[in-house]
Length: 149
Image 1 (cartoon, rainbow, N blue to C red):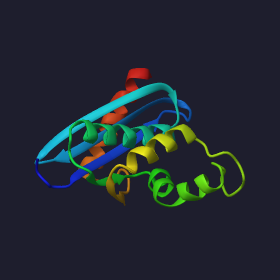
Image 2 (cartoon, rainbow, N blue to C red):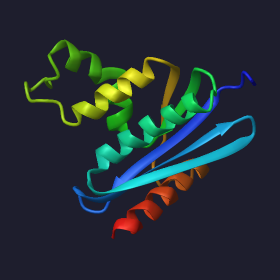
Image 3 (tube, rainbow, N blue to C red):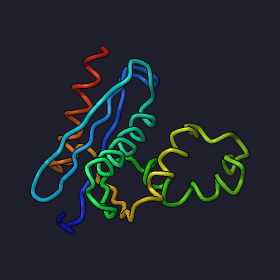
Image 4 (cartoon, one colour):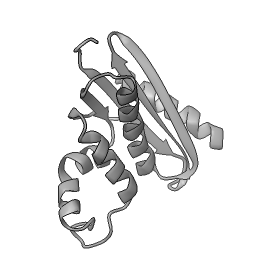
């Protein structure tokens, strides 16, 4: 197996919030692109963004792509949630600073358990700004959304 780091791009979105949604991810490893996507007839934008990351991490684990990855997302919610906010949520019994229950707790728990198995570097990329793989993820999301429209 090549020790080259795995590169992951993720995106998610929906029409209406909630509404029909999709997620997409592109995994780059050893000079190859791997595309994955899925959707839901009634979801939220944030749930689809989170599902994209969860699905990508499950795939690199299944494909035995090692434990080091660079993750690129256009979701500050996902990036900041996993790198900053989650520690306080856990400490506060899954309550926000405003003492309200954390939304999407089920996905945050699943995502954190997966992330803890990897050495991840998180990167935010501006959506719809011409980044090749972010745009490709967006196309995967749109195709999935259309299945439910």
